[in-house]
Length: 60
Image 1 (tube, one colour):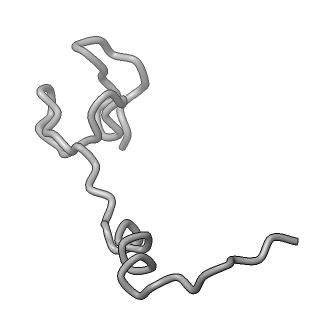
Image 2: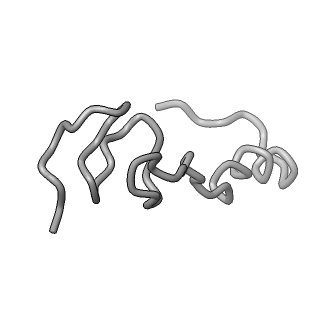
């Protein structure tokens, strides 16, 4: 079993864990058809359009 030869310093440990603190910020835009917020490159959940075409029936 692999065992570290040297102790990991606080600085190196905290640099490695710095990405744990980042929050996921998705690209949210307004739908051009209905104006509701939606994720980019996804079908709008409220009106069901994608790139100007009706893909899904509109939600009620």
